[in-house]
Length: 261
Ligand SMILES: [Zn+2]
Image 1 (tube, rainbow, N blue to C red):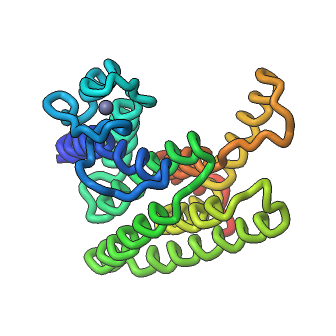
Image 2: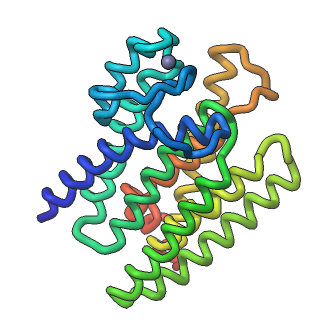
């Protein structure tokens, strides 16, 4: 059963992750979600055949548009989104198992992949993505709490969300250029999803994000000579911290906090 859930989740991640391309493209370019979803960005001719097959369509996009010959700016992005989503959702399922709350973490995982991609390319975390993630996550966590009577987990999720939001808001107000408001909102979402596992997990998630951000930031300065003012998007680090915490946070949180919590 466990292996089946993991396999189905990884497969769903591959398919849905490939379709995240539409979300990442439209939100990144601040365009509406108008149909046809898969089409040439230049001449708007809809893609057909292989252009519609998830993940494989990267091979099709690599050749550029058949009609206007325009090159596609990110031909490999659908395949990367699909493969990363498959790994994240498969790993979440392997960790969480056959549990109602897996639905919430599947949504969380897909959303983290999409937000990281947009933030990495554009240095923005779109409000629409954050709010639609919350609109899906809150009912799913309530459902999981109701099914297994885990209201304590729901309370910790709410506390984790509020604490992370307030802490990041304080950093944003102190250094507005260092920490965008999109990061503050995303921190609230990460606090929610990690808080459901335990408040020690929320701490581990943000600690991991800051350590990864610092290591990569210093590495980038050393390699490229980027100055301290170079804006490095923080969303992908928050996402990485959250994924690491869902997968391996329990032993770390236990080792850190079991004396006090
Ligand atoms: Zn075209």
